[in-house]
Image (cartoon, rainbow, N blue to C red; front, top):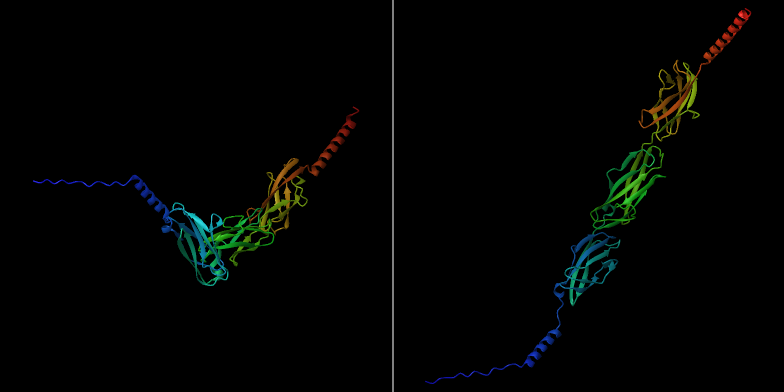
Amino acid sequence: MVSTRHIAAPSRRIPLSVTVLLTALALAARLASPVPARAAGALSITTPYPAIQAAAGSRVTLDLTVTTSAEARVNLAISGVPTGWSASLHGGGFLIDSVLSSPKSPPAVTLQVNLPDDAKAGTYHLVVKATSGGQAADLPIDIRVAESTGAGEFSLTTDIPRLKGAATTGASFSFSLTLHNDSPADATYTVQTNGPDGWTINAEVAGQSQAATATVTAGSTSSITVTANPPDGTAANTYPIQVAATVNGQPVVQQLEVDITGTYHLTLTTPDSRLSTRGTSSSATQQQFVVQNTGTADLTGVKVTATAPTNWKVTFDKDTVDVKAGEQATVTASIVPSGDAIAGDYVITFSAASSQASQATATADLRFTVETSTLWAIVGIAVIVLTLLALGWVFRTYGRR
C-alpha cells in the first residue's frame, strides 16, 4: 500500500509596509474626490400661498421658507418682476440676498411686492430662485390683479350714527365705527373729521390714540373711534359731524350727528341781589324775585314756592312763568307774618322749579326782620303821655295836703 503525502503550499504574507501604503493611497483618494453638499438633495423654497389675488396700488407680503438638510448658505434672487412693479426680499429687518439655513431653524424670509396704481388686470408670474452648493430651487409666484370695483371695496359703518345729550361741562360723545375691507389686498388708511366750529373732535384708529395711519387686512375690518366734545353752553340743536377714511386714495365717508338737548339751569335772587327785607306782623310786605334761565334750553311752567315759619302766609302774583334760555322773569311775593310774631329775624326759603326738567331747580333764603308795629309805638307813646299827665294832676291836686 502506497501512502500519499500532501505537502502544503507555503503561505504568502503581504508586507506591513505595503499594507500601510495601500491604506494611505485609499484615504488620499477619498479625500481627493468631491463630497456632494448635504443640502444638495434637500434644498427647497416654499410659501403657503403661491398664487394670490391683489389690487392695483397695493402691497403684497408673503412668508417664504428656505430649508436644507444641513447648515448651508443659500443665495436668493427674484426674476420675472413686471415693468413698474417692485419686489424685494426681507429678513431680520434688512434687505437680503442670501440666508444661512439649517434643518432645525429655517430662516424667516419675506417677499414684498409693490403693485403700481395703474396695474392692469391679469395674472403675473414671478420666480424666487434659491441656489446652494451647485443646487437650485425655484418658487413660482402668481399674482392675479382683479378688475377694481372702486370705493365699493371699502365701507365705513356704525351701529349708532346719532347721539343725544346736553352740552354740560366736560360733555363727550363717542362713536364706534368699523372700516370694512372687501378688497383682495391689505390697505393703509387715514381718517379725517369735520365738525361744527368750536367743537373738539378726535379720531382714534385701530385702538391707537397716537396712530396717524393704520392697515386693514384683506377681507377684514378695522375699528375707528370718534370722540366729539361740544363747547360748554352749546345751544340746543342738531350738529352734523363728517368722518372720512381715505383708503388707497379713495375717500369713504360716514355722517354722524349729535343732538344737543340743551342744559337746564335756574337761578333765583332779588332784583338787587339782597336777600333781606323787613316788615311788621299781620301786615303784607311785597318782595320781588328774579327767576333767570342760565341754561341753553327754554323752560316752561317754572313755579316759585316758599317755606315760611308757622302761621305765616306767602302768596305770589303768578302761579308759573315761562323763561327762555338766557332770559329772566319776575315774580312778586306777598309776605304776611303771623299776628303773634315777636320782633326779630326769621328765614323764609324760596324755591323755583320747572315741571319740564326735574334738574332745573333753584333756592334762595330770605331773611325777614319783624319790626314792632308803628301803631303800637304810637299807643305806647300815648300811654306814657297820659300817665305823665295823670301824675302831674295828682301832684297838683294832692300835693298841698
